[in-house]
Length: 207
Image 1 (tube, one colour):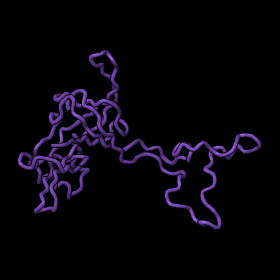
Image 2 (cartoon, helix red, strand yellow; image 1 turned 90 degrees about the vertical axis):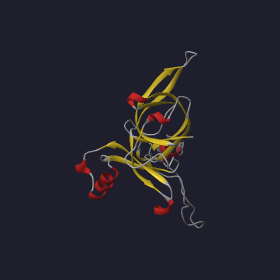
Image 3 (tube, helix red, strand yellow; image 1 turned 180 degrees about the horizontal axis):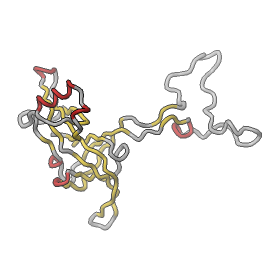
Image 4 (tube, one colour; image 1 turned 30 degrees about the horizontal axis):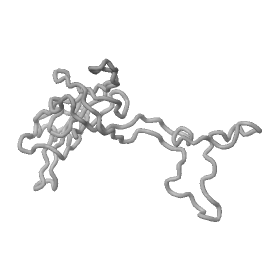
């Protein structure tokens, strides 16, 4: 397998051989269950579907119950597909765990960033604000300013930086090095930070 699903546990620091503290993220990676193996002949493309984080069956729809029953696995919260895998060794019902990684591996981690709600242009796009705070301009300090012309172009261009929803988007952090793997606890520790809040779901892809 080229990747696995996991959950962000939190951050810590480890010391290297020179005594320097390394900021690290602790990830609970797996065990994941193979819920489906797709083939080019039957499905049009090759992929393996992994499920992670068991959930109560009464919270699952009938179609998904049948899907999990066919694979012989318990109901799970998260389903994702991976296109790089060994089709000869994986089959429905198999487990994929953190042992596919080793210390020193380089991985890409994808997750959903923290949601910040509706934010203005100062926080969302780092605008400096308009005008000064003196002479009665107290309500214009964090304003976006003019957003378009009158006679030309008589419209607002697409992509204009304005206030809006900030965060809660898919973010990938590349080239993170695996510092430590603890197979008995399904834990992988990577150097640096990863997207999302604690208990947020992650995809870890080996490069």
